[in-house]
Image (cartoon, rainbow, N blue to C red; front, side):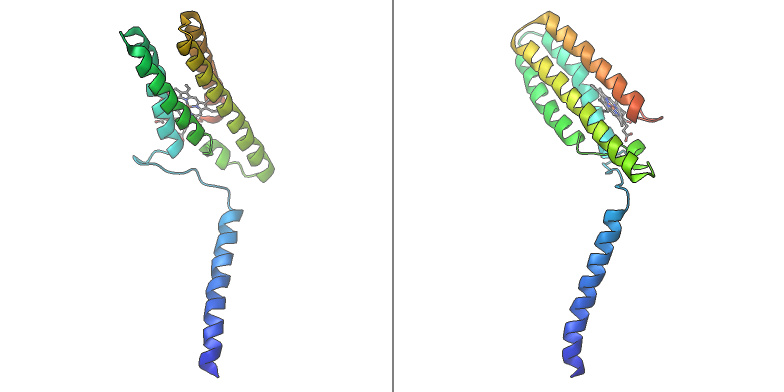
Length: 158
Ligand code: HEM
């Protein structure tokens, strides 16, 4: 009976179309996620990092600012964890799939170095070791410069 066949054919067609579209999307190089303001999600996370590396040393100079600095450190470490799941545009645009995958790993490893840097800064703040605070901040600056020269591309803020 034609109507009965339709009952089988239509869901199969829909299923086939869904699988096909899914496979096509998976085969494409991943597009960097967009946040608000037309900026990439990664650029927004970076903006938060920028604010944190300025506000943390400032908080440490204030009376009772240590708790504020520790709270900001806890927050920013979570931002780094979110940021490392992103793929920079400079990586997503690499045509060669093998090279693209290698660079995505490289980015993640560099972001892990950044996370370690924030953990070192937290240790220094917890231990009230001013010298170690300065050292950790310098190291974060170096990790930033390395990350930017490798992955940032041109444009955007510093
Ligand atoms: C404390 C460390 C860091 C700070 C303060 C920082 C800060 C920034 C700022 C202000 C921007 C511009 C955002 C905008 O256009 O609005 C940016 C972009 C970017 N940063 Fe960082 N960054 C840091 C570390 C890193 C590291 C370690 C990497 C790589 C492993 C990295 C990769 C990038 C990339 C790929 C962009 C471009 C994002 C885009 O426009 O889509 N950054 N960063």
